[in-house]
Length: 171
Image (cartoon, rainbow, N blue to C red; front, side, top):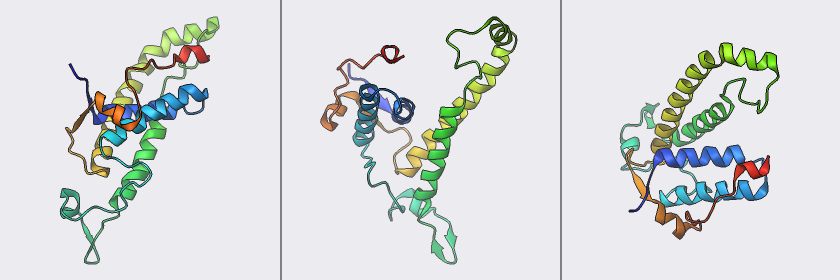
């Protein structure tokens, strides 16, 4: 059975590409290629994102007017919001997340405070991810429930069946 990819998968793939972007070249290249292939399967041209709403799209038809002219530059504003969300999501984590092995005092503080911190962090991450999914479908004039097949990625230069590099190999 074919695997279906959603806009959330697109957003998560982009976040993975950004998070692995400063690590080993092979690891970064794999995640960037996957994110780019998913974007292309959705019909998104990453090198030429929309600068204005296209006439006839629901976004264009409901665009507010400023001085009698439609504000059609909204995709650019959504691009800024998208980047802001991505940075916030990449930065938002527990202060204990950077410790593979913690000293006894840090382990004790993690035990005392970790769960109370982890729950709101997870809730905030989920809310921002939901926002980023909406920003993405609005920015690129996609239907919010639009999907593509994982097999479509091959047409865009990525083989989803090829083994991914293991991030633990790069620690």
